[in-house]
Amino acid sequence: MEHSSILAILLLFTICLSTSSNAAIHDPCPIPKTGSDLSVIHIYGKCSPFNPPKPASSWVNTVLNMASSDPERVTYLSSLAAQKPTSVPVASGQVISTGNYVVRAKIGTPGQLMFMVMDTSNDAAWVPCTACTGCSSTASAFAPNTSTTYGPVDCSVPDCTAVSGLACPTDGSGTCQFTRPYGGDSTFSATLSRDTLTLGNDTIPSYAFGCVNAVTGGSAPPQGLLGLGRGSMSLLSQTGSLYSGVFSYCLPSFKSYYFSGSLKLGPLGQPKSIKTTPLLKNPHRPSLYYVNLIGISVGRVNVPIAPELLAFNPSSGAGTIIDSGTVITRFVQPVYNATRDEFRKQLAGPFSTLGAFDTCFAATNDEVAPVITLHFEGLDLKLPLENSLIHSSSGSLACLAMAAAPNNVNSVLNVIANLQQQNLRILFDTVNSRVGIAREVCN
Image (cartoon, rainbow, N blue to C red; front, side):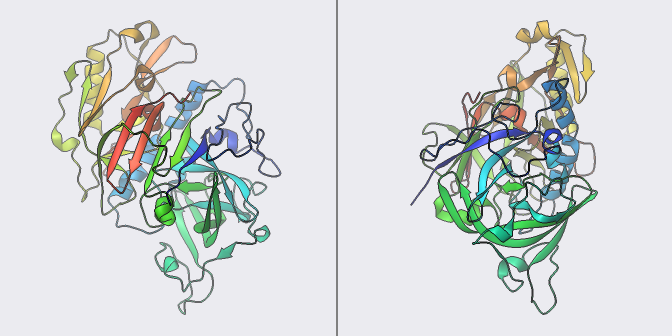
């Protein structure tokens, strides 16, 4: 039987979460279950369970701080694109430093509330457990000893043999332990485990996830990660016919105080009429959601871009992905330069820089700023100004909210990021290999 779940989503800023010291997971605004619809709470809203930012911190400065870690995430994603497939990939350590969204989930019996990072470019689910060494806060960690349905996975189980970084005895005895590098200078150790996962009104028994027992280096998402990729250990793969390989989300603006962003799981309740583009698959990195970006327009001008800079190439990992964890869209250097130069050509300067943004101008000109259109195969996405421009906290400057990908040997990947996805319904249909995009006000 097909099901549909609508999960509450809220924006996750790590500078806030890392200071959280709650003795337990607290939901300030608990809402009784009504079908599969849960409320959505912004991290800065009155219902946020996390500590608010300092009053002096403007939202634009927070976005700039998050965007400063985009290059590391894009480099990480580019390196993944050229790797051989792994069954349990681990998200970049930089994931928590970017503008991520989280979903309410419960793990165990009785369910323990967690606010888990939603990541479309990773498969595995994992949470910090109470015995974790080096985790940012064990007070809000999952307590496996209080769940009657928790169990570690044995080394002899096939799921364990597929885990990268496996540390099982040669005789195959004991529990399945694995260690993975995490974001450059960090390392993450976990026990592969199974327990009940509850999303909205849906209960998923024996869900496989990593119970993290040690982290070294930078901080990890304090309440874990829920992988929405396409690999064998992702939510879609583990739930099978429950969600039929379909989900969609609508991400609210960073500036929203009250908002109603949502994650819908399963084919029920999805838009009936939505324009789609083919979903491509890279056998070397099946988790990533590749789409065929064939061109970019600025105003009425088609930006001259060499086709090979946008072409999908499974061998090198080149192409374009849609990613929920990167803050601002990143194009490979020649594509970004050409787009930026045409944007500047159509708009009177002078131009200045602000953090990661190199094309800032007087906000009085933003009404005449040219519209940027992303041309996908079978679908044109005309970005509203709120998805292409970002304003300084004083309101005096407006900046083109895009940037170049890191210029390194793996810089072959274009990433459509979450700022450009806000207030859009993004539909992923893995069975029919398509991605749909439609305008939807989430704020």
